[in-house]
Image (cartoon, rainbow, N blue to C red):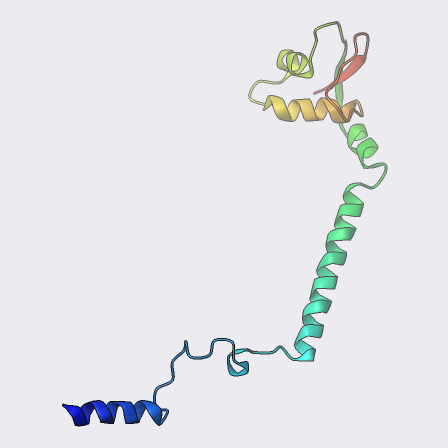
Length: 128
């Protein structure tokens, strides 16, 4: 029994067994990216950032709302009275089967509105 224990320890000390937990922070376990890899990754990140920035710029370009509003065909006009909300007006004029939230977005776009606040006496153009 003694000799097998000694043999086992001898084998371990000779380095035939290497634990993955022995030196987790050693330099052998760390892979360093080459400078070329880091440069390519930085360039890819820069290109993605530029594409995202240009996309956001064109979405908010002045005149986009006017173009969208001009493309909407107006069905009728409604004058806002005290107590009216976009939801109540849209509920009376939305087409059967159309989502009322989509219709409210169309009303806001057609009238160049950025908020849902209505003022009594305001004239709303209602799209088809």
